[in-house]
Amino acid sequence: MSTITTNRVQAAIDRIAERCADLAPDAAADLEREMDVTAAEHFAYQEAQARAHVSGRLSAGEAMIVYRALGETGSRGNGGWAAGTDLPTKVAATLLMGELIGGRR
Image (cartoon, rainbow, N blue to C red; front, side, top):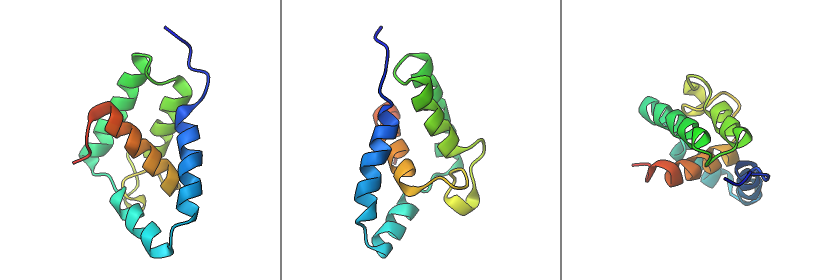
């Protein structure tokens, strides 16, 4: 098994942040709402990141980014994500979950 040396999740967040910076405020607000997660999605995302880490698909650092972004229970005021989780992180984590567990809906 190879060792993961680059934090792919952080690299994705950085790329997405550049693209989000170019969004009009109304487009950013729409995307923010699209990233809201239900309690069931929150649970599934946490389970998927944990399984991916245990199986070696994600490094500890990559899994921790997703874990912290979701928070233990999520915040109603931030669309089910941890308070303070920014839009690029939500998008990157959601895309990752798409890879790990399939389509969102």
